[in-house]
Structure formats: C-alpha cells, structure tokens
Amino acid sequence: MGPILSVTLPFFALVLMGYVAAHKRVLPESAIPGLNAFVLYFALPAMLFRFGMNTPIGQLLNPVVLVVSLLASLAIVAFTLAVTLSPRLQLKDAAFGALVAAFPNTGFMGVPLLTTLLGKDAAGPVICAMLTDLFVTTSLCIALAQAHEAKGAGARAALKKALVGALSNPLPWAIALGALCSVLDWRWLGTGGPAARIVDMLADAASPVALFTIGAVLWRAGQHAHTRTPPALYLPVAAIKLFAHPLLVFALGAAARQLGAPIGSFEIMVLTLAAALPSASNVSLLAERYGADNGRVARIILSSTAAAFVTFSLLAIAFRVAGTH
Image (cartoon, rainbow, N blue to C red; front, side, top):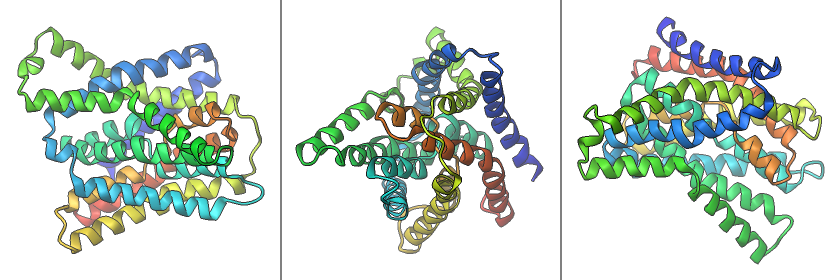
C-alpha cells in the first residue's frame, strides 16, 4: 500500500493545489488558458514524443489493446446514453455526459501517473487508450451532441468537424513524430545534444504542470457553469466512469486473452487502471464550446477526480496484492 500511495498521493495533491491556487486567486483566472496551452502544446507533446521515440511501435499501436479499449469506450457511451437520456436530459447533454463517462484523463494524468507507478512499459497501452478516445470516442460523442440539432448532412458535418478537431490536437502528432524518429533511428535527438535537452526540459515539466493545470481548469469550469445540477444527474455518471468502465475493460481484456488474443496480464492491468482514472478535464471546455450543460459536465469531472484518489489507489493496491505487477 505504501509504495502505491507514495505515487498517487502527490499526483492528486498537485491537482488539489491547482484548484486551491485558482480558487484563492493566487493563480489569476486569466492565466489558466495560458497554463493549459503550455501543457497542451509544449510540455505534454515533448513527453509523448519522448515516449513515442523510446517505445516499440508494436506497443504504441497494439491492435488487440486498441480494440479492447475502443469496444469498452463505445459500450460505456451506449450504456450511459441509455440510462441518462430522458425528457429532462436531451441528447446533447447526454452525449457529453457519455463522453466524460468513457474518456479518462489519460493525457494530462494517465501517462505520467501510470509510467511512474508501473514503469515505462505502461506507456504503450495508455497511449493506445488515449488515441482511441481522442479520435473515435470524442468525435462520436460530439457528432451525437450535434445530431439533435442537425439531421443528415448536418450530423455528418458535425462528425467531420470533430475529426478535424482531433487531428488538430498536437498530442497524437507528437507520438507519431517520436515513433517516426524511432523507426528512422534518428538517435541524434537522444544523445544529450541541444535538441534532446530542450525535449527533456519540456517533458520533465509536463507532469507537475499538467496536474496543477487540471485543478485550475476544474475550478474555472465551475465558475463558468451555466446551471446548478442536482447530484442525481451527475453522480451516477461519475460512478460509471470509476467503476463500470474499468470493470468492463478488465472483462474484455480477460475475454480476449482467453480467446487466444496476444494480450498479457500487464497490458490488461494498465488498460484497467487507465479506465479507472477520473474523467478528462478538458471535456468541460468542449461542453462549453458546443453549448452543452457544462455545469453538469464540470461536476462529473470534479466528483470523479475527487473520488478517484481513493478508487484508483485501491484498484492499484488490489492489482499489487494479486501479484499482477
């Protein structure tokens, strides 16, 4: 228990520090978008570039891991829509609720947390999960959110817009560039020269700044919430994120292994722990941009982040007790 809490406690403590700093105005609200931009466009891409360069391509694009992650995400989206759609909650808001139920915070939190907890071999499965959510889950949910306003060609246009948004995200391109450098054996980037030093400095800043930024973004999302959402409309979705999603990932991974698919217990553990992460914090910005109930989305993210310190830590301890790692 001690070694796991010694990793998880500092990670979640930095999130809390970011929230408190923004709440107490030590970090001005006007500075939060700039902090988020630094993480998204500089620090995290450098970290993912480094992982892409040092992780075998077969682990970065493991087809079995990709399929398990994708099937779980799609099933969670469908289940969340089925249990939350109602006259009180229309398709747009239900779709963004489904997105936060299926999209863990793999970018800002998952990659640094799981590689610290489990070693650098965890990077491949986490990156696979992140890619499926960036390109498929997010695009699908945004298209669904727009479908109630625009049928046919309009819905297709929404899907196209979502895919363009995914392609403009720098994180997949950083992974791809790192993988390309690895395939071409451009090791001059990793020999301690000026280029490598720049990448290392930015990458080393990614984890603490990203975690601090999560807290600040969560506080900002609460300030810009347009509605006061009753707990019955957001706590069940947070529970789906923290309990149903990792359970389904574990079941699908175990089933795939039983059927003879080349997926090991380590990959299943990493995918399950990735699914047990709290909801992706930047979905609140998407909900605000598309005119959804960002108050509900923000509360789902905040409650899942607060509870995940306990639920994620207990799951990691359970895997350790079971001798998976």
